[in-house]
Amino acid sequence: MVAPSMKVKCGVSNCHYWHNNYCTAKGLEVNAMGDGHADTSDGTCCTTFKPRGQMPTAEM
Ligand code: SF4
Image (cartoon, rainbow, N blue to C red; front, top):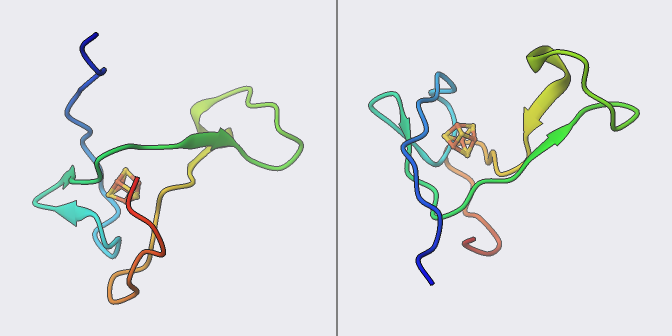
């Protein structure tokens, strides 16, 4: 079975995984913020985000 794959454009330039406006993480986790229910894209967030300069605890 082929694993899902896609390019993820991202504007969070201070993320460890960010490079030239694209995400370089092997996997991405996105969740709803707050009460766990998103009504718009503003209600979602990238859980994979790690601040640049901080080593990830485990690669996805
Ligand atoms: S992990 Fe999330 S915030 Fe970081 S570059 Fe990828 S999509 Fe952007």
